[in-house]
Length: 101
Image (cartoon, rainbow, N blue to C red):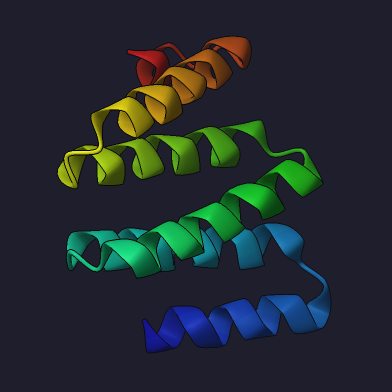
């Protein structure tokens, strides 16, 4: 997490929004794997917003999928269904059959 936080700062310094968003996404996924759901949701929501801002639909869809998985782990099924349905639609829109599946 320390390395990813440092990398995110470096990417931000040089104006690389994609690299910074990818670091945020990875940080969120690490929090998720450690069952730190509030922190994971914050990082993944921020990453999703950054991906959307730069037009990276795949990154945004992946973040939505992870957010849906977190809701599922917390037994928040309506929220999980909403996020996963949105992610599926985005994956289909960009032709990512594996992501949609």
